Image (cartoon, rainbow, N blue to C red; front, top):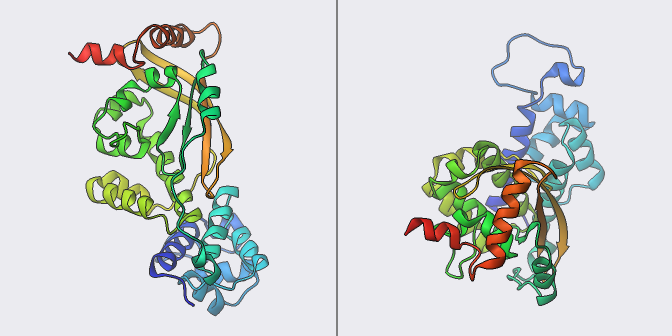
Length: 302
């Protein structure tokens, strides 16, 4: 059984985009003058991977089913893929195998009460659980206060769950809230791209990508870049409407769920002794005292 047209297109575009990023000089090949296209030629990747040009050309056209892991690893090394990109390539290969299609479609799962209790116990850190599609599926009060603009946005779903992809690309206010909007948007798309590799038959994910591609030219351009990110942690800078500029450190931890779901537990903290810590404490006091963690923002809008 051949891979689906969507799977073949993802393989083709991903490999071609990675090939275009590498120059002959980077891999020790002689420079042969002016080139019609950027990056390496297919025959050069084939040489580096130790396969025939015909074989690599067929691979780049999306015919990946049945390819051994050793050969995929050689191609990954030839294209200088990082760990996340290599994982994505192997996920695409697994999705192309006939046995993969016999798996039932992954269902959404509810976060267990014990996970919610854990989140609620973190009173000085903003903590939440994020699904592979970028939804906040569980959160503590400080997270809801910190991300009040996103929770108050019209881009939330019918259950009031905030969505990073939909907020970034469908709410103009996100460009004011996220200080480093462009970087955050690119990472958000790269995380979605990795999820699409893990779960290529997730209908809700396909619908989300289709919606954003239709409504946002920025999303279309970033999705077409085929960048991949699996792990995301570092510094987040926010312009909070109530307390002002905040610079927070965040870390992501795997939170295995049932039904093959892969969720992240993400925790935001502020460096001790900084203005950001003072502002986070102020948000925490609001979150602890009010009936709703987002009350300060909603009160301001009345």
